[in-house]
Length: 617
Image (tube, rainbow, N blue to C red; front, side):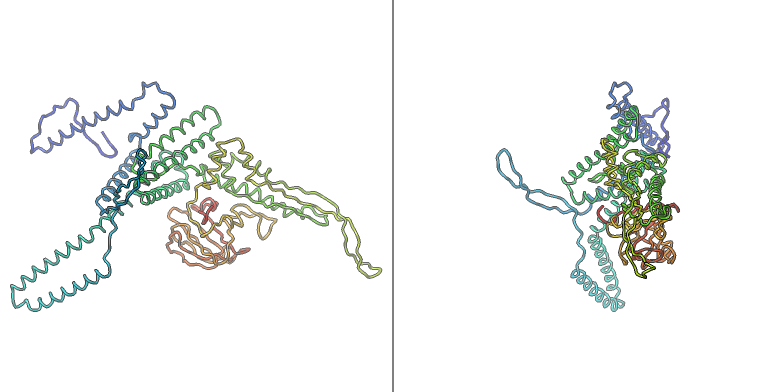
């Protein structure tokens, strides 16, 4: 029989069993032990089989779903890799708990006021709380005293050593005394540093537990969601989210402690169940027929049961960790990219056509424009599509994009005549005179309806989609894996979004803007959004101006352009949060701003979906 990569040999059923192995025969002893373990394992296996055998039970649909959830949570349903990670996480938690118990503690006492409803009297009870004892490091006075004592001892030993050569008895006694002093010093130093070593061990074990727990949770999520394997950004997002939530739970437990930690755990469990309900709704919205709705309803119930049970699978800290990607876009990043570009292309076509109206419609005395702003919030569009369709492709929503665009923008032209006065030169009198004439005018009007209003109207009556749309609005897709390049709320400072646009230097032509422009004053500090290496730190007079490119080991690179000064050089290792430059107005620029780009293995992605905002969203 094989378990993982190990092979366990058990005795055949008909093999004779010896009652007692000779003490000197270690092989016979091990064989007897093997027979006992084999019988013990078989009994556990039979008991487990009887406990989880629902084949003859007459259960309802809900009960069957619950039974399947319980069956899934059994270790036997996990892969060998997941079992190994779970075991490693459990062992790390046990070691950390033992180390914490061995670390120095101190007792704190306080009087707690209690009210007795029966007697109507108030009493005070002494409450004892054990907390980690802080290590007291040696102060200046003690350190100086110890140093002076050492110097005095060294002086005495030096004097004795100078005169002990003439007397062997003195020499032997001096050596014994020196060894005794060294032993005493070692014991005292070891006792003094004992608390420090224990606390250092606790910190090291907590770090190992953190790594083991997050690895287990991440692998469990990947096994429960096999479709995410091909989505690089979603995998990366989920791994970082698990780490953040686990660290948050750890901090909450340390800050709360005792009953507060338990209350925090209950609250986190309630929030976890609520988010899982939203995931169930997301599954339901994807389906479009009755049979699929029944199946997906069962899936939602199963997920709720799984996530509730998962809270007790591995010893986690007070807050727990939710591994459900609620609020994260389910579509492939490349499809999101294509949809966003398609809509910006329609808007750019509109802007270019407006810029060419006078060329395309000559013969008018004047042109009057009443134009609304062209543009939209990228989050609004993707949030709406994600709430309505779940996982979508650019081809799936092509008709939807056209409908939204046509409802959002209305361009009209109208001719009118107007009596105006103009100055003309009278050649007979040689003087300037004013005369009236009928001016032919083309009035151009662009009416813009906010996309938010259109989306709300389309979602009216669909409660599930409305709730999911709000979830996406709050999370912004939860795809932001790169830290903010600016220490401010830069969403409100975007001057040009990613995608197609009218050329800022020639409005009658279109260009593909592969980055995001943020209007900030010159000299604003710019920070690295990721760990990695500076691939380029140079000057491009006809394009980016001063710019920096940072790339990490996974092929994700970020570009920061039109900078005023550079604080880094090519080849320099960079940690996220380091200041790398100051914003400026260099290169091909129409004003002071920061231009940022995001690439994965040379493929461009919309930075707004992957850079965190520096302020409150």
